[in-house]
Length: 462
Image (cartoon, rainbow, N blue to C red; front, side, top):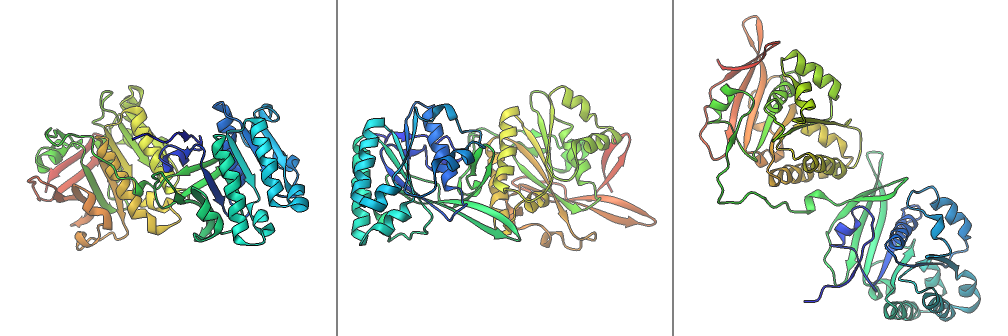
């Protein structure tokens, strides 16, 4: 079966959503309210297209002069003033629309497409064209005439409109694809989202995907939970055991952690979750590096903690056996944070990850409804890359009466569940560790004591 030729947009994340890019010679509507980012997205696609050897024609049906558009776009890094007047041409069709109507606009744009040999046409102000149409059929005729000539010339068309067109509108029925951009506020945090409402003749990743506008332009983060992770580990190859960092804990686990497994370490604040995570990472080697991905303690504080526990994290870092990636748990795009972790894993060839903590990851998202889906997708993606994961999860209660009811909803994703808590033994407080679950393996459920000193962390049976 012949594959359709694609026009790569060069916009981070958009080609992933479009399964390779726009279809060359097809027509698309980019719709959204004023300020949603339509003009930036279209021009970012256009300037990237020109860098790949294409030619762009930007036609406006708006009264706004091009100078203001240039002034605004010049603040973005993708803008290239040298391309203006050469590979990029701007033309105003506003006067033609006002004085002569839609038919003359079509003639004007046909001439310019042919004269400029344009391979991408951006038409801004489709709403004005609609207002000039005497009937819906006239809007259809306008779009059909324009896209028919553009397709014959091998030119892809992007129509921009601030109108929230529905699926039954004349414009929607005529074009090959519809890209919708929106902005909403959740818990007083503004969230920008992009949705592919129509993609004729092409697959696409469904859902509303968050994006941001920076000085580089628009970056879209495809929903991690809409992309299924497939394991790269062959089913017939038996997985080996890897150490948890503690010989005594390995014995209780039945020989250590299973390679590519997910372990969830739950417990209240101060119980020692981060310290146990550092011990887990102390088994990292240059051939099988480890990564600390955290939200609460900076790398400087983690190094101090590791030194106090007799764990030589600085030496591991100098040998390339350990990497640290920290970000504050301030509101952000949770998919972007997840991709940062996955990219670091791929870049450094990471084989073990301590994710500290899953609550910190959850606080990043302004939309609580997305936390569980993204968390599960992230853990499964790490498993698919052959990474052994230990993730901490903080309990809000210091006293644990029934830990099974305190585990998060996504705990079923974990292969191993470990509970670390603080209990009182006579006049002393003790850190105790219990193994609640080990998937597909026998384990010793006996209570373990965790003792921390400058000589290291000792795990022993009570």
